[in-house]
Length: 347
Image (cartoon, rainbow, N blue to C red; front, side, top):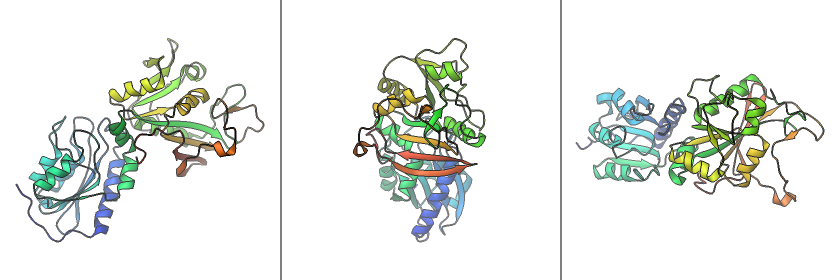
């Protein structure tokens, strides 16, 4: 059924405000939707008033658009749907969102960013416009792409988005000369690491870290599922990280395998040699560094990375700090662009 014309389209500020609400709504389900994207949706009635919000449910459940439209009911007729990602137009685990949008008789759809998934890739926008729905694309797109960066990267490259997490003192040391490193940061920062695990489909460490620290690599301090645990090399039979995937091949092949299995994001928690290997292979998409207000002093404590340093100041690899947040006395710094993958640089 064709959409019924409503009042004049809401002002651009209303679109922006609604998209920001959709982004916040999506953030609430960040750790529960993979391998589906974490999407938020908002329904505005013809006057521009928010009447419903929705977020994508766990795999097999409804997408954000369907959740919001069900809540809105008849109040959606002639109104506007604001959604962070282009609605799907194909049958997957659920029917196409485009069908639900057309059934709701909306006048317009406002989209944060197109979906690069080959099954969508503009077909959602095309189907809506062909049915007479006004479609606006690109509202708050940079923020939406930032939130969906792992999904967009995976759909564009076939590989998971690689996040390296490290904790260090102010003088850039990750462990004492005897190898001890528990705990450099405080309890709140460690809980934040569990959030990163919950948002990741796999966590990768080296066999040396498993032998030295015997980590569980599970999600315990926040609500969320445990990631697949991957050990580069062999884990002891009694290691607490078992069951795990033990990998002896190359890192690019590992990422291809994980991407094919539906992993959208992997978290590298390995030591200095593992992180150096990912960096030298240019496989790091994002760095998350937790800095503690402490120093070791001297030069014999363990550094962030193994291997040779840049020989001159002109050969430093420089990135971009995109976030710096205090976490109960520690500092979380998020950096893009250092030894990043060449794929999907905008994400």
